[in-house]
Amino acid sequence: MRDFHFTDDDLATIAHDRYRHPHPHVQEKMEVLWLKSRGVAHTEIARLSGLSRTTVQRYLDEYLAGGLAECRRLKWAGQPSELHDHTATLEDYFLANPARSTAEARAAIERLTGVKRGLTQVRQFLKKLSACAGGRSARSRPKPTRPARSSSSTSS
Image (cartoon, rainbow, N blue to C red):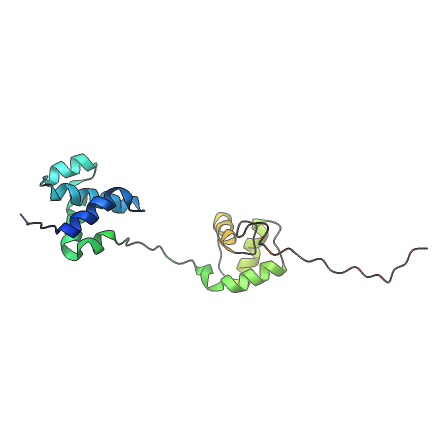
């Protein structure tokens, strides 16, 4: 059985982060560490926290490997979208040629970038662009410009 030693600073941080850390996953880890600092057995920590014993062990291993910094680190970042590299080009295109539908935007994206995406993925990507309705609030979004009317026609 491994011996866990918690410094006073670590205990203060754990007590604070149990309820006040912005990410619930970190709060969960801090709860496990708090219970361990109180001498609770791993099986009992698993029961009280609603986690598996393996998860409790993994959280405690993280603490031993890297301290609180390792426990507070969120390890998943997701994968960047293939469209991310084309953001500037697509934003410029959609400012000049606003799409009337998601299907039209999907066809334009595929034509311009060669990246094929479903309607939901296109919709989510377009919301991130400032050129689209969901990207910025209506007041800060650029308004489409209309061609100037010619004043050469006269009516008598």
